[in-house]
Amino acid sequence: MDGQPSLISAVQAGDTDLVRILLHEHSDSEYLDAAFCLAVRMHAGRIAQLLLQYGADAGQSRPDDLIPLSEAVDSGSPALFDALLDHKIRGRYPETELQEARDRARRWHETGVEAELRRRTGSRNAVGRRRVQDGEYDSVDEFTLDGMTVRSGHGAILTSIEELLGVRASFEELMDRVFSQVDQQDHATWSRASLQLGERGEEATWTAAAALRTSPDPSRRLFGAEVLRLLHLFDDSEEDAFAGPALDLFTDWAAAETDVAVLTEVLVALGEHSDPRAEAALLPHADDPDVRVRREVARGISTLASPPAFSGDARAALLRLMTDPDPVVRKAACYGVAGGRDNDPALADALAAALGDTDRLVQLAAVYGLALRDDERCVEAARRLSPPQRGSLEEEGYLDEVWRFTWRRDHR
Image (tube, rainbow, N blue to C red):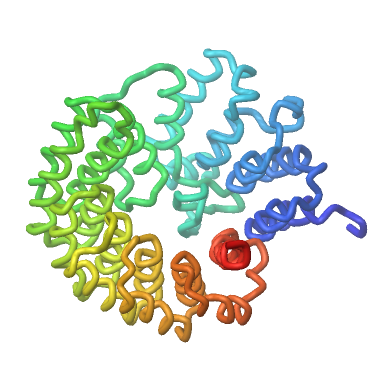
């Protein structure tokens, strides 16, 4: 419609990227609350959550502006369900309604989306199925039959409702919930279960997850590795009780694991330890033939940098990774060199060489690294690459560092 706010039009079109750009530019900010209600009614959970992140006030909505909790459960979208359970409107739902939603989610999960769709429609037609992004980081499967569309996130919704109700599902129950229907790490049911277990911070969960290391099923080893990593990552106590056991376990595990997905998760975990043993466990995988492994080595070395310099082996690995065939590896290696405090001229020259890379983000990471080193070569490169792509916080951050360098240079 002519004259309609751009944000409302973007929500109606289901254009998540455009919504993000408009929010970043503070366009139509007076329409945030209306856009949130519209996104919920459209079952666009990912957009609804994005609007909340940028300041939409769910509390300004009336119950009739949204959808019933039961409808959100039926949709199978954890992102949509979470949007309805925003802290500003969570109190609208009495415990009895949450219990009914829990039972509803359990029925969907245990029956299976395809079987429940056939029961509800009575149709024997082919069921359409595709993988879709649901939340910012999670995916689900979306099933369509005779015009009815449902997503497969009921297990994740069930886990969330149980947490709200104070129901503590066991490690085994949560794991069975994952593997009864899910076999991919980015599925919302998997990630919701692993996050909840990681936040428990208890020895019993550690023991149960560690036991999965010897499972013949790589998916279960992967689940165990993720829970163990999160237990350490979420432990903010002064004792940091999981740090030592995690480093011991993941160091040995990296040397023995044969499955690429599991090894990748183990390397992510090692990258969260600033310890020479973690670096020593990462470096043998720097030349792995699988790009997923090399990406995590590059990221891991980046986070392990400790002043005043990289170790000789780490420096050599980063120099190789900065010329890797994969642009994501090259960018991660450039970013790692940028974040380190190593003043070796060879690293600065390698960053300067990366200014000629064919990938824009690699170039920008190199510009960023040179700016942090007060290297004048960043200025002309930044001029060539400006302005940042519309709505890209990452590009803005890289180029802002050049501005800070020129300010330091001119005000010394």
